[in-house]
Amino acid sequence: MSESEAVAEEAMLAALHGFRRGRGRVRVARLVPIRSGVVYRYGATLVTAHRTDGATVVVAGDAWEVAP
Image (tube, rainbow, N blue to C red):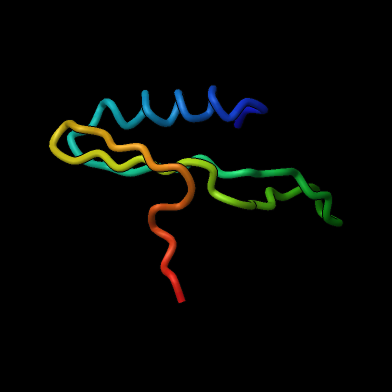
């Protein structure tokens, strides 16, 4: 969790770097109060990353979103 998209993207890429394959994304999130506490409410995906055979590809937006 970060207020900076760049910091969040950097942390995601660092986490993916330790694996030969994987994927990750950075999404907008905010805390929303409810009766029993707070929950995260997620919004748009800002950046998506996919790692295959040690190479990482970064895409703006949601690369996994399925079009209707």
